[in-house]
Amino acid sequence: MQAYKAEGVVIDAVTPQNEVDTDQDGRMPACLLPQEIEVEYVGQHLGHAIENAGLKTKIWLLDHNYNLWGRAICELDDEKVRRYTKSVAWHGYLGQPGWVQKVFAAHPDAEMYWTEGGPEITDPKYSVDWTKWSQTFCGILRNGIRCIIGWNLALDENGKPNVGPFSCGGLVTIHSRTREIIRSGQYWALAHYSRSFRRAAMIIQSYGAIKDIHHVAAANPDGTYAAVLTNTGATQRTVWIKQGKSAVEVALPADSVATLVWS
Image (cartoon, rainbow, N blue to C red; front, side):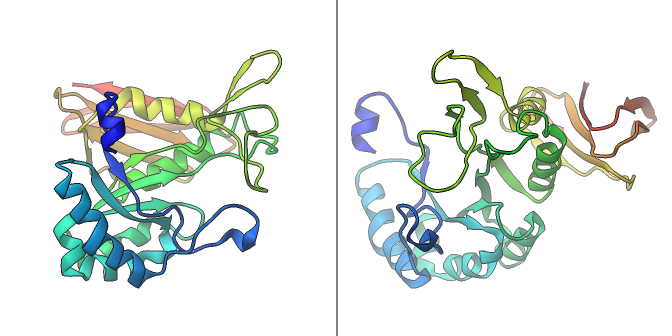
């Protein structure tokens, strides 16, 4: 981290280990990191080293799936760990984003981050599954998780380079010979959120139970508001967005994502 800083690249956060609870059945480079070892490493070694180096780099615990919410609580219970971090990184491969609420119940000041998830290059809907990803992002943000990080950023038409057996796809595909760029459905979904929800935006409550319609809204630092609406259904739906006495009608085509920004 000091070497990166010396080159002008400031590391915002690190995790002690990627996917602490799996060795991937020996199919790819991985490292199990038991709960008690992560607690000792962060509380007695890593946090102390970062502090002594004068770095402001944060530590995000776990870096694994929602089903490890109990482990997250126990690690945050440790006083030595809490001296250096109150943050947890999540993956979405097992469990539901709502499970992080169990951690918030025990540690209301915890900070949550979503650090891994991406498409498969073999998925026939790789480039058009934007509503699937928008629904996923909606669930992440509505449960108090502060960021969404795609995995991977760019791979070739075969999902390479890849040291493991999984058919990973990039946020974009760059063809190895033609250099053609193909944007994934995840890319198009993420664009709706990143263009309308500005840095330091605050997710606000939004209400409405309409079949196949998923919604999340935010207040931006510049005073504007934004909402992302996702229709995962096979038919067009018409919804009304209401705030106070103001209301606007929105027609959502089948399998679509829409963004609204207003002041």
